[in-house]
Amino acid sequence: AQSVTQLGSHVSVSEGALVLLRCNYSSSVPPYLFWYVQYPNQGLQLLLKYTSAATLVKGINGFEAEFKKSETSFHLTKPSAHMSDAAEYFCAVSSYSTLTFGKGTMLLVSP
Amino acid sequence: NAGVTQTPKFQVLKTGQSMTLQCAQDMNHNSMYWYRQDPGMGLRLIYYSASEGTTDKGEVPNGYNVSRLNKREFSLRLESAAPSQTSVYFCASSVQDSNTGELFFGEGSRLTVL
Image 1 (tube, each protein chain N blue to C red):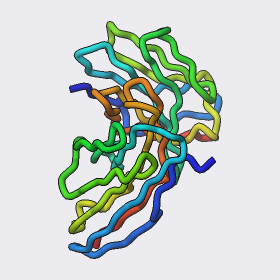
Image 2 (tube, each protein chain N blue to C red):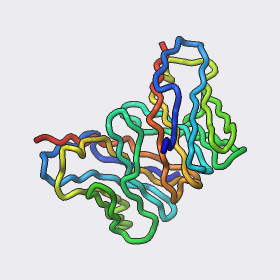
Image 3 (cartoon, each protein chain N blue to C red):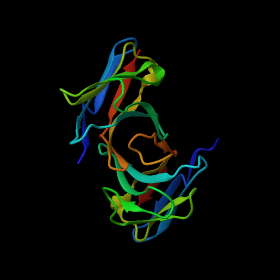
Image 4 (cartoon, rainbow over the protein chains, first blue to last red):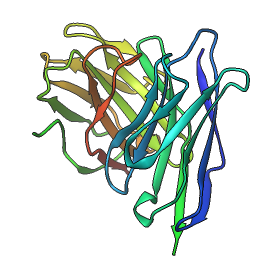
């Protein structure tokens, strides 16, 4: 079965610093991979998705992720953090007709 | 543009009581899902409906039942609530199955079972 592992339940950065949220996947077939963001007291919304086209995927709010098959990774990055990026981020992998989510990484941004 | 609407947003139950969480989407999506979110556990799939008239179990179906009432509506029922079902429940929908499509989520229903 497909699965994802997110390294670090919490990541703290300063405003303006690089954001790096890690996700490794396990899949027996070429996967479709997703990053979702959840702001407090809201549902999840899609940041970006990889569906076997370009390996570098650009999403909303300046985020991007690179699919690396050799490392089975799909890490999320943003060059410069903003206070409004503080939220919980979930990596997900397609699994038959559904999505399987990681446990989430809370991003904390300090002034 | 309502998207995915869940009711109720908050509910407190006593152990053994029953209740139904309602979900409706106005995007003409084929597939609908129920997830639960618990601290440190991420989102876990309870049930899903790939299309109108079909339902399938997800990762954690025990203690729940679902009904795909029509293309718009997908309800989740707890027949005899237990404290372990205290959670935030999210309904989601997608145009087709979620392999390549985007899931659209409701704002969640917070359930506490005493």
